[in-house]
Length: 112
Length: 111
Image 1: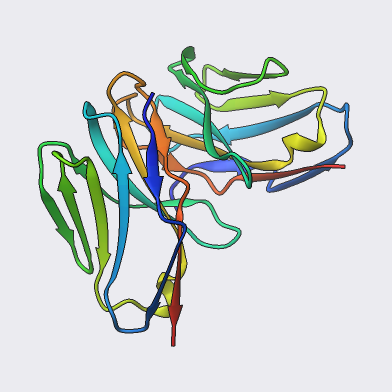
Image 2: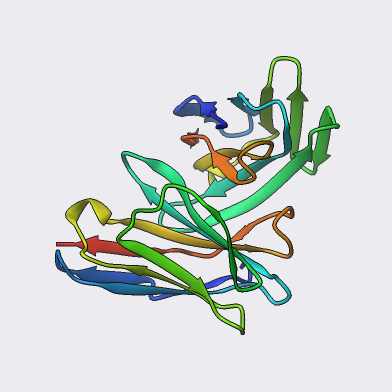
C-alpha cells in the first residue's frame, strides 16, 4: 500500500458526460500528479500540482482539468467524454517535485 | 523530450534470473526508476538509481546503469511466479522535469 488513495475504483459512464476522479496523496506529500494509462498510448503524464499550484502540464486534453485543494487532495475532471477516454487514471504523489513518486491504485474509467 | 524504450515481453523459468532492459534518450535524467504493475493493480515502486551511480542492489533486485550508452537494466535473481507482472522503466529530470515511462515489459515466469 503506497498511501495514495483514489476514488472511485471503477467508473462507467456514457459519451458526452462529465466525471470527477479524486486523489488523496500520502501524508506529508505536497505534489500530486495525474497519469493516463491506455493500451494504445501507454502511461502518459497529464498534469502536476505542487502545494495547490499547477506546476507542469503534459499531454492533457482541453476537455480535462484538475485542481489541488488546500488540504492537498486533488481532483481530475474529465468532460465531454469520448470512447477513447476509456483508460486507467493514476494519481501519484511526492514530497517535493524532485522526489520519488508513489502511485495510487488507479481509477478505471469505461466510456460507453 | 525524453524517450524511454523497453522490449515488450520476457519469459523465464522459475528460479532463473530475469534481466529487463531499458534505454533512454535524455542524458540529463537525474533519477531512473523501476515500477511493477500486477494485473488490475497500480504501479508499485521497486527501486531507483541516481544518475551518478553505476549499480544498486536491493535484495533480489540489481539495477545497472550505463550512462554512456543510456542503458538501464533490472536483474531479478531467483525469479518466482509472483514476479510475473509488467515492469516499467521511467526517467525523471532533465528538460522535461517529469517522469517519462517506457512501454513496459511483460514478464512471464514459467513453472
